[in-house]
Image 1 (tube, rainbow, N blue to C red):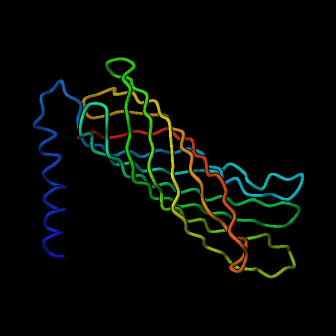
Image 2: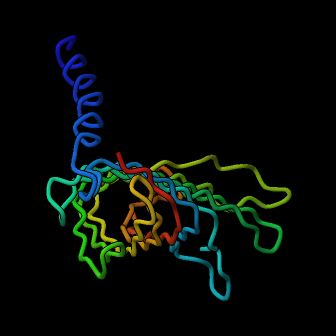
Image 3: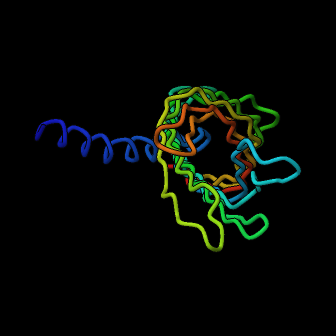
Amino acid sequence: MKYIRHFLAGLAVGLPALSFAQAPNLAASTYIGVELGTGKVDLNCPANTDCSRVDSNLTVRAGHRFDPSWAFEVTYAHTDADWGILGRNYSAEYTGFGLGAAYTLPLSTSVGAVLRFGGASNELKLQPAVGLSGSNPGTTTTRSVKPYGGLGLSWQFARHWSTSLNVDLTRADVRDRATAPKQTVTVRTLGAGIAFNF
């Protein structure tokens, strides 16, 4: 375990050094970015309601380009939605860790379209409806591994900086109580962010 930690530490130090040593006209190969936007968990809502409301979302991406078009990418996403319907409160918290690839299609020297795909370990915490006089049934956590996909538009506006607009889609399992059967719902996020390339 000790040697693995040393190897990872060396890799973390070595990759940026190699990236800065590249010729000035080559794109930086390693990047980390933060995006803010909206997220929606498509729950099965009661009739004539919209309990699957859109709420804030945070996404963090880190990747390494192993050629001008392809990158290996790790993604973290979090959406926390709270809402009320007729005095009854709901809560759904989504957290996902993705591992996959990103393909960039150049549209110009600084703008590219990005296609993402891979697998995600998703966790969905659901607190069912709680009335004003009702007892809290507690939060039910359901974990699942699902494929994900996404589209983005990226603009490299400086040697080490880029900005992007991204749409991502995945699925997640959910239960409204611990003994209930699983249901599969869709999770959608839309965000704009900035990345540092080194």
